[in-house]
Amino acid sequence: MHKVDVLLGLQWGDEGKGKIVDVLAPEYDVIARFQGGPNAGHSLEFNGIKHILHTIPSGIFHKNKINLIGNGVVIDPAVFKKEIDSLQSLGVNAADNLFISQKAHLILPSHRLLDAASEAIKGNTKIGSTLKGIGPAYTDKAGRTGLRVGDITLPGFIEKYSSLKETHRETLRHYGYEDEPEKYEAEWFIGIEKLKEFRLVESEYFINNLLKEKKRILAEGAQGTLLDIDFGSYPYVTSSSTVCAGACTGLGIAPSKTGEVIGIFKAYCTRVGSGPFPTELTDETGDRLREQGREFGSTTGRPRRCGWLDLPALKYSVMINGVTQLMITKADVLTGLEKINICTGYRYDGKVTESLPYDITARVEPVYSEFSGWGKDISAIRSCSDLPPEFNEYISYIENETGVPVTLISLGPDRTAAVFPGKK
Ligand code: GDP
Ligand code: IMO
Ligand code: MG
Image (cartoon, rainbow, N blue to C red; front, top):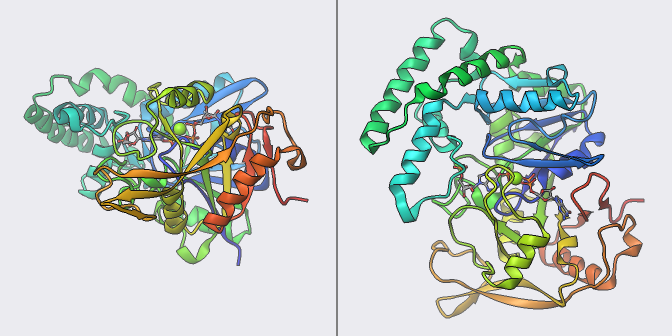
């Protein structure tokens, strides 16, 4: 049967999903984002241009590819317009091949204020949200009070908007938060007009029809499995289903119609925002990874916390998503390190375990296996046979442990920086 392939992050986001989607896009006809919103920042680099996408699928730079924003996504019209304008300045007219689900929810200016107010009140226990209004928008979705893209063309939209805004104002007052949504409204409504220029579709029919026509479809996830609302390090998570199942609910494709599950992971780990991170390095090795890997948030510019690869967490993500192919990014950043660690288990309650403890916030101490590093610069390598033996050993170990083949090795931010093990 013809199926939809799903690509998603296996760690805490920023694994390099945008880059990999851009690399794989020529093999597909359709790229469909299934969840998240402007909290995402997906970087693409080619011909010396670096571009960051937030809401728009990462296939947008490829001509003649259909890009779909699914019902599982939350859209901030103001951010959306900025993205469209910035694509326009690069000569890309997104309206040509971008379709948007009528069932995608809208992020209101007051959602952003609620996000900020809720974080402010949490003090030390704040999530470290991107402050894009994600949590409050999904809260309204689940609470059955949200506004959807399809509403913008219906009579009564302004009234619905105003009524929801007033509810939010009450909550903001309760928080003692001063800012007023009206300050951001003009820009937001300009964004709404921009949205109206696009094809707003019944996306579940749209995508299933494309599937019937045997179009090759890639579902693009945002964030990562360890930020998933159910399986992430709750409450330090995002508010959507970032896992493979999220592609079904976020696009309207049946589980029986999902094909390859492509899991993206970094050769080390990073995390932005708060929450547990067992392998975090707060020493000079952590600083080195941050500098060499340019680990600063694509959306907020915040420095990313860095640490060693966490195999129990990776295996957990492989299990939850049913990953069939692994793709590794940023191995080039490890070049020059004499020794490379991989966490193989956690010491927890005096015992070593390979499973993620429920209360991961409690002190878990990583147990490491040490691997020899490689001195050779691998960033310009374009053929697997040129990879150093130490590097191959490192990859084989991960493949053996996870039981999943590595089918793409990314060696730099550029579109061309990748090798494909096993590909003839
Ligand atoms: P995403 O959110 O998963 O799309 O990832 P981000 O774009 O937020 O962060 C990944 C960062 O690493 C971006 O700056 C990419 O340009 C960069 N990147 C992606 N793959 C590689 C790689 O293999 N090597 C290096 N050095 N950088 C990479
Ligand atoms: P991409 O798609 C990395 C993190 C935030 C915060 C937590 C909740 O680029 O991989 P939210 O704004 O969703 O309420 O924030 O999740 N976060 C991300 N971290 N990459 C992302 O997206 C993220 N989106 C959200 O830093 O810790
Ligand atoms: Mg990112």
